[in-house]
Image (tube, rainbow, N blue to C red; front, side):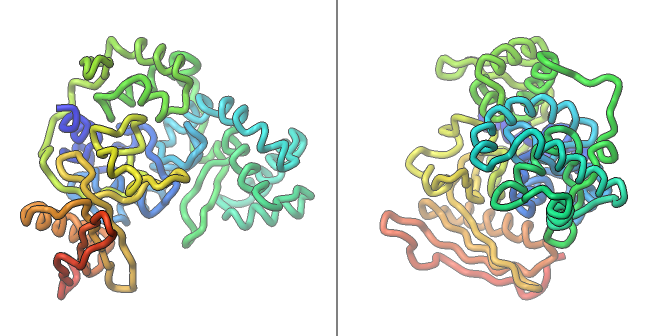
Length: 376
């Protein structure tokens, strides 16, 4: 029941939104440091399994924005939510970065000066790439050596000076925060904002625990527990293995036995501190080898049963399915169908192969297939 509810709440087994902005508003914030992976993560949760381009158009038109929020990582959020979510996490992120600022020789004067420079530059332009802002900062006398640039730009985001813009080719761009997310008279703040975030988290990812919410939000465990209790009247609760799990009661459940190819860093894994229900501990290192990485996953009925890789060429996409254990013919067929849906979203011809990951490594391919014509 836990996995079935999560699959529905996350819009994986049953999609209720056709527009990317409405989906992101439902999910509130979506991990997005890997741009291609994150756009697929949204596309597969939309009605009709649309092309990647549908998500990219929403980003170009600023119906969805990509910026640093919550844990200080890239997230997809809506312009309506961008400001209050940024404020909720900014102070803690700055505090946690203090030691790194000292290592890089970054002072408050550096931050103040850099924010003035990038604001002036963007007043003349709708958006600028990371490289263009780097040039502007160097010309303004602010060193961007090493990792200083990343921290200068992140701090400008946290201070609501700039916000992630549309992609320019393969490059990240930024726009003025006020243009992307104009300030509103009424926004949740403080403990009220924590409670709003908790209610949204549990409705879109529940059943989950306060510890899961703390992990996902970047709040302290004490804050997360208080916010969970404050949000509880709007939620349902159940006790699983002696721990309270909160969830929304209005989500319509879909086909929980389906097979999906989920992208790297997907919310299906990253939204929870405890992933044992979804990912068997003996397979965890095959998905999370360390360094904050979470590989793309083959998911059957909510459980991670393997990983996958893609290699793009101009007209084709090679998709390798790596199973933890040899799948049934039915599951293998459904995984192939999921791979074809992914290729169709890119407008490319799929070339699908699969192997079983045994204790000694990869075994010979189980089967291989290449489509003869582009997917419709």
